[in-house]
Image (cartoon, rainbow, N blue to C red; front, side, top):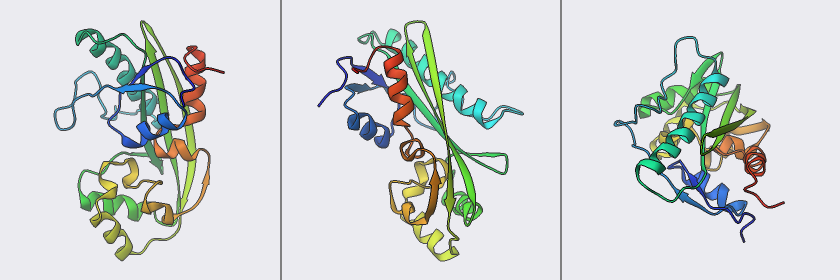
Length: 206
């Protein structure tokens, strides 16, 4: 069932974001950027000096949406709005992205063990010369994790492409004692804010 008669592009490789868009009945085509290590220069995911976590995640999401519009034009694709999102974690004032190695994933999970951390997901929508965004912030509390279960979880491979080295929709759900905020925001695409943006652009049927 489609709740939107307007087709969009999703500028993301994430299967979780595709699943969530399907959940709310939005028809879309996937628009791919270069994958690491050959990343596109106009979508810099490096943290800038002194950049606050909120500013960082919004900047990256908006750059992906704007970059998507430019790629649609350059590739001579059907003109459609471009939706993008970016998710990051914050702990003790530090931005935590995706792990660079299994050892890095273990280190991140050890730091999250037994503590609260903040998950921020910015979602952006670009169409023609217009870009809008929304920001979702949630708090996640991990129970205390043993060194053995962290190593076992990392060995399974699930953490490696995910901000904060875990996915709430996977086995890591057993680590989470409490959340305050949006489950779908923690997954990577906050559906309340996404629907709000789509309605703002008159792309979602009421």
